[in-house]
Each structure stands twice: as structure tokens, then as C-alpha cells.
Length: 441
Image (cartoon, rainbow, N blue to C red; front, side):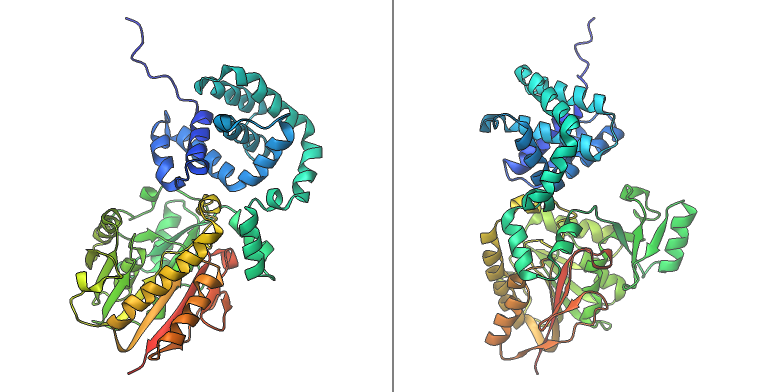
């Protein structure tokens, strides 16, 4: 018997190039594409290596593409974009990863055969060796090219510079940094101090996120299932910046709360952890996403009414009883969480911002009639663009005579004329915008 049933060992560099192609050429999101490719790896180490390569290349792609352009004698044809992605995978390992250069070059060259392009092996070998030789002269060229230097598309650099003339460089730098591994302790089950103690007993270094009541950051990212008590609901993964939403709602026992656009349910759970007697309704438009809310609540042993529906059509899902509080965490450009989702740089376009702002205003208009007089609505985005934030609130207040701005007491970030902005990287948090709106009686 031959060993024809043996699966060939997949080349992780080839897998990386395929993931990058799915994101940059096909416009698919990294979160959706990567898991299937990680499953093709022969072990956990390879899967982790694949993830590190892919995130690194996507994060720094404008810089790597610039280097590629400098090193190739003539640009590759569109049908060979897989080779360009493969070269950037090689360049990233040589420039940023602690991998032996000979292994990088031989494995990356070998990956060209996986793509049935043996003719390209010499080309890839030549480009990667040239980079090694010319690195000293190439790196200064990167600094002279704004897109390569900041590793963001031109429209995004310009939009951020216009919105935040004092802070744009810090924002771009924060977007390119690896995000911290942050969690929210379930205070209805355990105190933060006791949970930090449990982590220490498991040799996991962590510290509290000071401005929050339940936030902690681990020194190194780990598999969530390795977090003590994760499966029994002692904690959830959530950035500290997102943990201000629920405290702003001024909760009290037995209030009726609507969590609009609730998936994946992090804030829904946080509501019930802070005030277990609340009657919470969580709505999201996609069944696949509401399923995640249900799974998260069940892990945390919490109960809410979860509905799959379009929030803009209350007649289809609302029971007619007004809510005391509404949390509206609207779909947005996600420009405040690029460090977690570097593919956002390429999946978003400038024209999306205007469309999103219209949707955000529409959502506000749809849920406002469901709020009781004297009730409070908290508007949240993970965007840094005023067009999706203060400008939406400004338009809404102009139209809605029974709405007024209430103060956002958040100790971190930048108070705005309307609402409050946390920029990416401030106190190591993701970027979030908050505005509190009170309904007059």
C-alpha cells in the first residue's frame, strides 16, 4: 500500500496568501475567512503562525505593497495578485517576525508551486533576497511615502487628519498597534479583585482597567477557554472602551430596557450583570447574529427577550410598551477598532461614511418613539468620525423637540460639544463615541 491517503502538509505561507487574497481582492472580512484556513493547518502552532502572518500583512499592507513595488522590475499582472500577496507574506516575516531568513525564503518560494506557478519561484527568491540586501536603503524610502509610512489608504489618512488635526498621527499609530486582550468580569458572580486573584493563581498576569468597574487587561492574549471560569460565565471578552455604555444608562431595578442592534450581546449581558432585575429586549436584524446573543446569555446564565427583526420596523416586533432606557449601539464605519480589525482599512470606502450616517439617524428616529417620557437613550458608535457621531446627534436634536443632551460622565477621552469621544489608544482603549439623550416629559 502506498501512502496516497496521507494529506500533504499544507504550506502555511500559501494559506496566508489565500486569506489575504480573499480580503483584499474579494472584499471578504478577515473574521469570516480566517477560521476555515486555520482549520487546514496541521496543528495549533501552525494555526497561530498563520494568524500572526495574516494580521501582520493586513495591518502593514500599504507598506509591504510599496516595498514590493520597489523590488519588482515590473508590476505583476492582476491574475498573479496571489504572488504579490505571497511576496508581502515573505517581506513581513523578514521585516517583523523572528523567523530564520533561510526558512522564510525557502518556504515562501515553495508556496509558488502550491499555486501551480513554478515559473515564479525564481522571481520570489530574487525579490526576497534583494530586500535582505537593500533593506538599509529601502526603509528610509518608506518613511518618505505617507501611505507606506502610516500603512493606511490615502482617503483614510486624510479623513482622520481632517477630523482630528491635533491627534491624527497618534490615531494612525494606535490603529497599527496590536490590541490588548481585555475582558469584563461578571460582577453578578465574582468581584474583580477575586477574579484577578484567580488569574494570578493560574499564572496569568492581568491588571484592572482603571476607569471601569469590571474591566481587566491580560498581559498576553490567550485562548478564551483558558480563562478561569469562562465557560461558566465569570467573564466575557470586551474592550474597556465598550464598557462605558451600560453605566451611562443610569440603571435602576426592574426597568424596561431595549438593546437595539444588540449582537453579539456583550452589552446585553453587561446590562443584566449590573442589574439582574431588568426586563431586557435585545434586537438584531440577522438570525445568525441573534443566535450569538442567545449563546452568550446562556453561558453567563442570564435571561433576556431576544428578537430577530429590523429595528426600523417596530410594528413588526414591539409589544407597544415604552422603554425606560434604550441602548443604541449603531452599525458604523468601525474606524475606532481598526487595531482589532485591520481589514477595515480596505473594506471601507469614503462614500460609506455618508451612507452610514443616514442609517444611524434613521435608527435614532425609529427607536425614539419607543422611549418613555423622562427616559434615557445612549447612542454609541465605535467610530471616530464626527459625521457618524456629533453630526448625527446635531441633526437629530434639530428635528426632535422633546430630546435634549444629557452629560456623559466618562473619565477618559475627549468631551465634545455634543457627546464624548474616546480615540483609539487613549488609555489603551478602542475608539468609541457616546451621547446621552433625555426625553422631556
